[in-house]
Image (tube, rainbow, N blue to C red; front, side, top):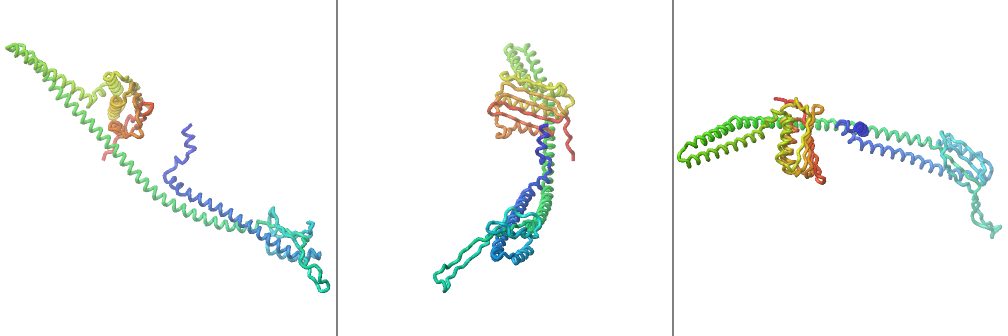
Length: 437
């Protein structure tokens, strides 16, 4: 459930390389294009409203200046004709209203604008100017000008026409932006196609090289094991046979020396013959140990489970300060010989590393068969190390290469603080046969 949920939250994990390249290429362009479109739309809206405000204020002032005579004289015919002409020439005017000084309505003319008006209105005062001039008849009279507000003129604007015009301009810009975006998308698609083709070719070459490397490692390991088996057979069949014969001859010489004269010479011959027999026996035992290292015959006799159990028991006997335990499934039959020898060698190398470097008190080996895979775990409680910072040694690198040569999985985890190391290995029970050319 968790895996399904996490994949649902991360759908891009199922995307192809080409799709990811397209998203990486187009996402910044689309975001930038959307940002520019939004900015253009907002700018057009602001321009339309700023233009309406400017026109409304100018109209209110001009018509207010033209309304002084009408209010003072009480005749509105000329003013109405003037306002109607203005309304016909400007379709953005929704209404023009004239009020007296107490804001009582005197005149209200509706424009031809469609839609509703703006919430705000533009107002200008209608003022009456009186100029006082001294005359010869009254030389000491008042002089100057007085200003009196006799009314107010209000203009309400309707933004629909201007907004529609700005929307038309915006649509043209949007069309150009979409065309540019489509062009960028086509270019990105073409580039991603070429890049994806090159990338897939490179990945295919890497996979082919890796597959060839794995096949080479399998063949090298197979050749090494075959050579080891041949050397082991030669040691067992020839050298050990010669050593057995030499030991028997030495024992025969020792027996014949009892009848030799003088007795001191007979004793010396018997002693030297027994020394040769002991040396031959020691060489024979060394040869047997070398044969077991070169080719574990116990693997052929006892199978993988018995061979690993015997190896763990031998390590426990030779290292009494550490407890070795082995846990293996009963059903480990039907494993390919190549897999069995690889599993045996990997466990052997892991245990060798433990006794050389780990200083562990407990070691646990597990072998399990699950889903056509052989699972091997070797875990100890010794001194750990930083597996991320430390480069693989020859032993670990050899184990890794052996496992990878059979298309298996190798994982190593170690804790340098708390201690302990675990090696987890997966091997296919029946590895794929290498392609022959």
